[in-house]
Amino acid sequence: MNLLDGKKAQYYTLGCKLNFAETSTLELLLKDLGVKTAVKGEKADICIINTCTVTATADSKDRQLIHKVIKDNPDSLVVVTGCYAQLQPELIAKIKGVGIVIGAEKKHEIITAICNHFSPQATSTSPLPPPPTSHSSPCTFFPACSRGSRTRYFLKVQDGCNYFCTYCTVPLARGRSRNGSIASIIDDAKRVADEGGKEIVITGVNTGDFGRTTGETFFDLIKELDKIEGISRYRISSIEPNLLTDEIIDFCAESRAFMPHFHIPLQSGSDDVLRLMHRRYDTAFFAHKIEKIKSVIPDCFIGVDTIVGMRGETDRYFDDAYRFISSLDISQLHVFSYSERPNTKALEIPYIVPPQIKHERSQKLLSLSEQKIHDFYARFIGTKRPVLLEHTSCKNKPMHGFTDNYVKIEIPNQPQFDNHIIEVSLLGFNEKADALTAVIDN
Image (tube, rainbow, N blue to C red; front, side):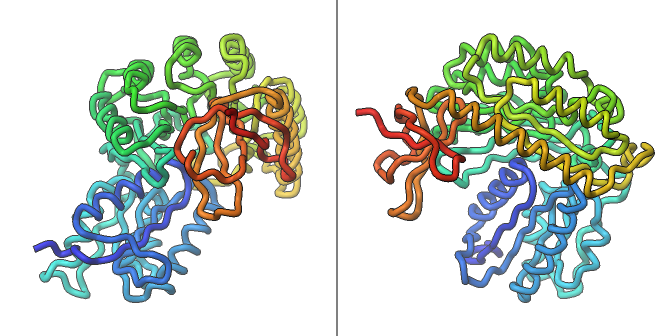
C-alpha cells in the first residue's frame, strides 16, 4: 500500500539555484509516490520549505515563511530542510506547527521521514528526526535537477565547499566539497534532452571544484556534456576565478554548446580586503582572467559577485575596490552587503562598517552595474543573435528570451516559437532598459 498516493504537496524555496534544483527533485520523487502538487487555493497535506542561511536577512525570511506556511496550512505536515535547518535545527523544531526538521546533512532522508509520518504506526507524539549536532557536517551527495521550465534546467553537479572564506557559513551548512560522477551527471543531462530541454545551467556550491570525490575534473565534465547533441546550450552558473582555468576558457570559446557567458565571484576589488576574506587570488590575477576571456571570446557576458561592507573595509579599501571594478571589462555586478554570521572568522576582524555607509557603497556599485550592463547591451544593437525564447502565460505580453551571450530580449508574443532558438535582430532598449527589443528574421 502506498501511504502517500493521492496526497497533495506544496513546495517553497529560498536562496540559490542549487536549492531550487533540490526542491524540484524532491517534488519529482514525491510524484513517483503518487503525491500531486497542490495548485493555488488547494489544501496541501505536505508543505516542504527549503531554506537558506547565507545572510541574517535570509534567516529572517526563513522564519517568516515558516510561520506563514504554518498559519495558512494548520493541518499540513510542515517539513523544513536546507541550510538554515542544518545550522539552526533546535530553533526551528521549537516552532509550533513544524513537523519535521531535516538539514542538508540528511536531505536524502526526507522522503523516508514523510512516509514514516503517514504510516499507521505513527502517532501524534512521534518525535521529530533528531536534529544535526553542531559539529555534524553533510557528507552525502544528493543529486538534483530542476525541471521547473521547459527552456532552462538547473543541473546540480557539486555540493559543499572546502574554502572557508572568513565571511561565509556555507561550508558549515553544506559540508565539504563532493560531487556525483560524470557518468551519473551525463545520464541526468540526457534525461533533460529527452524531455525537450534546450538549455542547462550547471550549478554547485563551488562548481569548479567538481571531481574531488570521484578523481575527475570539471574540465572532464564539460567536455562530456558538450557531446550531448540534444542539449543546445550550457551555462556555468558560477565558478571561482582560481578554478576557471585557461583550458576551460579556451574550450568554451570553441565548444558546440557552452555559451559565451561566465559568472565569476570577485567579492572585493581591494587586495587588502581579499586577504581579510581569505580569498585565493588577488586583483592582478582576476584582471588577467577577465583579459583572457575577452581575448578569445570578445562578446562574452561576464557577471561578477561583489560584497560591500566587509569587516575591515575602510573607506580607502572601498575606493580601491571601486576603481578596480570600474576598470574591468565586465557586464554586470551582483552586489551583496556583508552580513555578520555566527561561527565565522570575520567576527574577529576589527572595524565594523556602519549600516548607512554599507548602504551607500552598495548603491554606488549598483549604479556602476547599471552603466556596465547598459554599455554591454548597447554594443549589440543592430546585430543579429540566436535567442532561446520562453513562453508567457499572458497573450497580451511580449515573449522574452536570452541571446547566446545573455542579452535579454523581448519580441511580440508568438507562442509557436516557445522553447525554440531563433535568430533575431536587436533593435534598441525597451522603456525599462532591462531588455532589448528584437524582431525575428524571416
